[in-house]
Amino acid sequence: MNGPLRKVSIFVALMMAALLVNITWISVVRTDSLNEDPRNRRVRDAEFASDRGAILVGNTPIAITNPSEGRFPFARTYPEGSTWSSVTGWYSYDYARSELEKQYNEELSGTGSIQAVSRIIDLLVGRNRQGANLSTTLNPAAQAAAVRALGDKQGAAIAMNWETGEILALVSAPTYDPNRLSTLDLSAGRDAWSSLLDAPNEPLKNRAVREVFPPGSTFKLVTAAAALDSGMVPSTELDAPQSLPLPNSNRTMGNSTNCGGTTVTLEQALITSCNTAFGNLGLQLGGEQLRAMAEAFGFNAKSTIDMPAAESRFPSEIDQAQTALSAIGQFDVAASPLQMVQVAAAIANDGHMMQPYVVRTVTGADLKVIRSTEPHELGRPLSEANAKLMQQMMESVVSDGTGRPARIDGMTIGGKTGTAQSDPDRPPYAWFVGYAQDPKVAVVAFVQSADVERDDISGGRVAAPIFKAILEALQ
Image 1 (tube, one colour):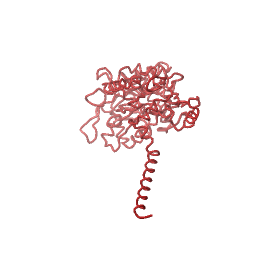
Image 2 (cartoon, rainbow, N blue to C red):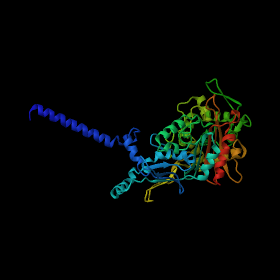
Image 3 (spheres, rainbow, N blue to C red):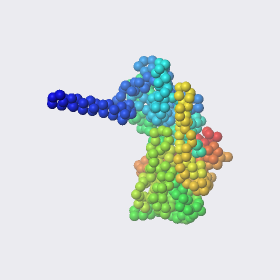
Image 4 (tube, rainbow, N blue to C red):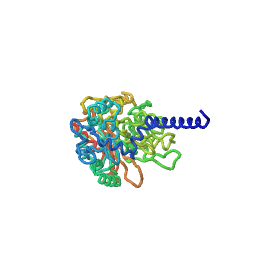
C-alpha cells in the first residue's frame, strides 16, 4: 500500500473509531439525559402513547389513564384532583411531571428496568405496553381533613405513622387541579400553566416537601434534645431574662410569652416557649452540639422520602449570636414541614427515626408485586430514656402550655408551637408539630400566610387547629 492510501486508511479508521466511541457514549452514558430532555418529542410521544399505570389510595384511583381519541390514544386524569395534587403532581406533555408522577415515572410508564421482562412479553404477543400501578399509604379521611383545614391559606400539613414511617396525609395549600395541566388540548394546557405559574398564592409550590422555611420555636425540640443528650434533665434551671443581649452584637433577643420567671426549668421553658431561656441554652451548648443533634434528625442531608424533596439546613461556622438565634429556629435554620414531622415522630417512637414513604407497593399489570416498601429505621437521634423525657415535656406543652388549642379529650398528645419571623415586611409563619399516642400519628401543620392580623398569628392560634382537625379525622 502506497503512502497516500495508507494515510487515507488511517484517517477513515480513526473516524470510524470516533463514531463508535460517540455512539457508545450516547447509548450508555447519555441515554437518561437525552430521554429526559424536554425537547425530545419522540420519547414524549411514545410515552403518551402508552397505558400509564394508576396511582391508588386503597382501591380508589387518584390518577388514572383512560382511552382517548386523536393524536394520543390515552389521557391522564385525576379524580378529585385538587385533593391529591400535592401527592400525585401533574403529568403534562409540555411541562413534564412532578411529585409521584415524576419520582415513579419509569414504573408508571412501564419503562423501568424491573419491567424489562414484561415489555419483552408484550412485544412478543403484540400487546401495548402497560405501566405499573402504585398503591399508596395515604388515608383519604386525613387528606380531606387537611385540605379543608388549610383552605385557601398558603401552608402545608403532613400526617405520618410514627412507628412505620407511612405517610397518611400530605397537603400543600393552596391546591390546584392537575387535570388542567394534563389535558391533551395542549393550547389549554399552556394557558393553565401560565395562569398557575403567575398566581400570587403560588399553588405549584409544594410547601410540604419541596420548600424550606424558618421553623421558629418548633426547632426548640431539637435544642431540648441536645440539652438532654448533654446530661441535662427537664428540671435543669435556665436563665430566662426578659431580654437577652446577643454576644458581640447590638441586637437583643426578647420573649413573646411570659416565661414564668427569670429562672425557669428546661421543661417550663418548653411549655412557655421561652426564647431567652433557649437562647442561653444554645450559648451553653454551642453551635457544634446543636448542629450535631440537628444532623442526627436529618438536617443537612438529602431527604429520604420517595418524592422530590428539599434538604433542610442548619448553618455551619456560626458565632455566638447566631448560635443563640439558631437555638430558637431563627438565623439561617431552614426546615421543610416533612423534616419537622420527622423530628416529632422520632421523639414519639422512643428515639427511633423511621424513613417516610408514600408508596407501599408497585404492582404490574398482571397484579404481581414488583416492588414493596417495608418500614426502615434511619437512625436514633436520641436515646429511649431521653425520648421519654421529651414526650413528658411535649405533653405538658399541650396540657398546660402554648399548645393547649391542640388538646383532644381522651387522647394523649404532645406538641410544640412555633411562630417564625421571616421578614420584617411580612407576617410571621405559624407552626404546630406533635404526635398522638393512639393512633400512632405525628402531624405537622404549617401556615405561611393566613388572612388574619399580624398580631393574631401564632402556632397555637393558627396552626394547632389544623393539627387537631387531622387527628380527629383519624380517630
